[in-house]
Every structure is written in C-alpha cells, then in structure tokens.
Amino acid sequence: MTTPTRTRRTPRPGWLLLVPALALLAGILLVPLFQSLLRSIGTPEFTLDHYASLFTDGVTLTVLGRTAMTAVIVTIVTFLLGYPYAYLMTRVGPRLRGVLLVIVLIPFWTSVMARNYAWIVLLQRGGPVQSVFEFFGAGDIVFQGSVVGVTIAMSQVMLPFMVLPLFSTLGGIDRKLLLAARGLGSSPLVAFWKIYWPLSRGGVVSGLILVFTLSLGFYVTPALLGSPQQSLIAQLLAQRTTQLLDFAGAGALGILVLVITLLLVAWANRFGGTISAIGVASTSRTKETR
Amino acid sequence: MTAARRRDRGVDPIPWWLIALGALVALYFILPTLIVIPLSFSSASAFEFPPKDFSLRWYENFFTDPVWLTSLGNSFLVAVLAALIATVVGTAAAVGLNRLTGRLAGFLRTLLMISMVTPAIVVAVAVYISFLQWHLTGSLLGYVLAHAALGVPFVLVSVTAALGGFDATLLRASASLGASPLRSFVRVTMPLISRGVITGAVFAFVTSFDEVVIALFLRSPTFQTLPVQMYNSVTFELDPTISASSSLVVVAVTIIFLVPLLIGSRKKTR
Image: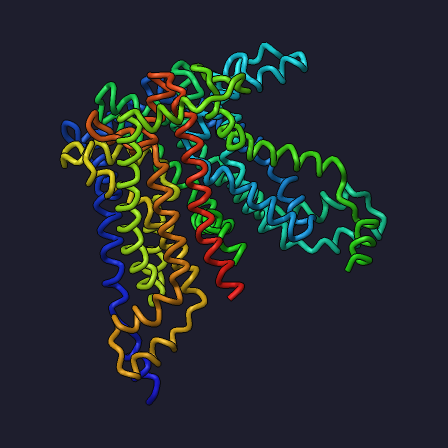
C-alpha cells in the first residue's frame, strides 16, 4: 500500500526541467548542423554530388590524410610522454601528486590565444626552441609554418586528455602484483610487460582514441603555426565557407568530419565513457581538492 | 610511516630516469604559460623571447587603445550573459535528469554533452551559415546564445556531481512539512548543490571568455571579442599588445579558478 503513494509523491516534472537546455542546444547546435546536412544533400535539389566530389576533387582526401597523419603523430607523442607521467603520478606521495595534477590541468586553463601566441614566440625562426636544437646540431629544423611546430603545440594541449584517463586506470592497479612477479624471479621489464601493461590497456585505448579524435578538429593552432600549403581539414572547412562561399561543399565536408568524430567517440565510449571522461577531466581540479 | 616508506623505496624505487622524464613533461605542460608573463613586460616591438629590455608599454597600449578595450568589454559581457543562461538551463537540466532513469534519460544526457566532443570548427561553420540567415552574426545575442550552448555541458557535469551526494528524502521531508516544490528547491536543494552550480558557472564563463573558433566566424567590424582581437594581432597586425592581453587573461583565469578552491577550503576549515 505504501509503494504506490511513494511513487506518486516522487516529483513528476523532471522532463519539463530539461526543456530549456534541450531548446537551447537544439536551436543553436542541432538546427544549424541539420541545416548544413540538408544543404549538403539538397543543393540545388537532392544530390550526393557534394559528397562524391569530396573524394574526387583531389584536395580533400590529401588534406584528410595529412590531418589523420598529424593526429596519429600527436597521439603517439602524447602516449610516449603521458604514460610515464601518469605512472609517476601513481608512485609519488599525495602532496606531489596534487602538484603534478595541477600541472596537467594548466593547459586546460591557459587561454587558447595566449598559449598559441606563446608557441609562436617559442617556435619562430631564431626562437628559443630552434636555438636549443641548433645547440645539438639540428639547427635546420623549421618549426613555425610546418607540421613539426603544429605537432609540438597540439601535443601539449592534448596531453591532459591522455594523462587523465591513464592516471585513473594506472591508479587502480595493485602494485603488489609487480612485486610478487619480481619476487618470483622475473625481470622488471618482463613484470611490466606481462602484468602491468595488460592491466593498463583500458586507459591506454581510451586515451589514444580520445586524443586522436580531438586532434582531428584543431583549427586555431594549425592556422597560426602551420602553413596554408600544409593545411589541415579544419582550415579547408573554414576556407570553403568564408572564402569560396561553397556552403553545400562545406556542409558535406563538415558532416563527414562530424560523422568520423562521432563514430570514434562512440567506439571510445565502449572502453570507458569518453564524454564523461572529458567532463570529469574538466572538473577534476575542483573535485580533487574537495 | 617513514620506516614503511623507506623500506618501500628500497624494494621498489622510482627510477631516476622516470623522475627526469616527468620533470621534462611537466616543463612542457607549463612552458607556454610560464613565458607569457615575462613576454608582456618586453619593450621590443617584435615577438621575441627572452626579452632584452623591460617596459610597461604593451600594458599601456592595451588600456588606452579603444579596439582592445572594446573587445575586452564585449568578451566580458558575452561571457557573463552566456554563463548566466548556461547555469540556469544547465542546473535545471541536471536536476531534471537526476530524477529520471532509463534509456531515454541516458540518451538525453549524452545529447546535452555532445558539444564537448563535436569539433569546434564543424559547429562554427554550421552556426555561422545559419546565423547569417537569422541575422545573428556580429551581434551580442548571437555570441551569447552560441556560447551559452557551449557552456551547458560544464554546468551539467558539475551540478550532476554535486547532486550525486544529495539525499532525495530531504525533499520529501520538506514537502511533508508543507513546502511547495519551488520553496523546497530554493531552501533545500540549492544550498546543497551551490558549489556544483558555482563551479559550472565558472567553467561556462571561462569557456565563453576564451572561445576563439566560433567567435572568429561570428565577428563583424562592429562587434568582436578579445580572443578575436588577439587572433587579429598575430595574423594581420603583428601587434605585441597581445602579450599584455595574454598575461592579463592568464592571470585573470587563474584567479577565477582559484575562487571555487578558496570557497572549498573555507568550508573545510569551518
């Protein structure tokens, strides 16, 4: 007898509270995206030509390939730097761990334009980074206006997205297993490879997919640090929209990039919630100190 | 404790190369933020680091040039309004979703979060073309609406986290004592989730204040935000005033993020 009353008492208008947020998102994000989908298949009438020409115009595929390649390099760099860093975070004391976590989150709250401006100054011809490389006898590497500079700047801001999922996975691994393996006579490398690495794979996979996916959409960094001759897909999209005014073609390209991204995100979600991982990452600073 | 730690260190030490690598990665994380502040005090009229002479001329420029000041004012106005809208609708959505279960609720939560993973450029291009038709480009309203939509996921995440520790029986107690749902919300729910709401509002504000990509597309000669002016200054004008602007923004954002931290520590000591 008590159960029905309780369910009736539960506040009902939960759905109504969602209406303003859904209306805002629908009006500002979903309707424009839907309109660009319609434009891409309905200009001048129903046609798939705009999609077909993405694959035949000789430019889009090259740029898409270059973008994917850049994203792969950024992913590898962030993995090679992020894995040891996340591991170190699990090994140090709580105070130093807090410091290391704050350092990870610094790129999140350094303003986009301030960060890119700093990279321009650091990477420019005759700038500090080139001087360091010159000192080691590699002075002929060009950083500004090349994919190298774009990769360096992108990897820095993508590192948190690698470190945070890795940190949450590595932090859950019982290190006594490693000590047990050592005690049973295995070398550190074998113990790492046979025990630690397989246990960390979940975090690795979600970090890799997350960084690769987010790297595909970079606009400001390649626009400022790269060169128009080596443009990435976001620059191509912007150029088709604002310079060529090819709204249908830009719509098709935008939808293609969006579909690739969402498929990758859905895939990554199977390894532990990408969207929630970003959400947690973005607010973890305040959580940690609670 | 120290004995255990010492023994631990003996059996399972942290290798020196790991510490060195960690320090290098940490430097990589903070390098751009670190150089922005000394750069802003440079007297050179070209982008150079390390600065040879120090001066305040770029700060003077920033605070006397109407273009920079107007952009700053616009950014501030847009961010305040966008954060306000995002906080109100995002908090409502989080409270609503908290009461709902099932597949549809899960789907709606994902839908509300989707802008976090959608490439900014795809959104920017779509929004730009639609806003052209709706006459919203280059207007305060256009900027506010677009940035408010971007801020909603941050509010949703932080308020949902705050609601995680919320005991729903408190609402029933309040209702049984005769409070209306609205009164219950204001007197019971709101104080308990206020930290989540403030955190969400701060993130929504900073997201808008710092947003470049959509802002670049929505700009007009009569209305642009600070990140857009900073973009102009490195692409067209090569104007080192950006260094003063960068360091001001970095310092301001750092202070803004410290506010929730300070509120938290004050609560802890109380």
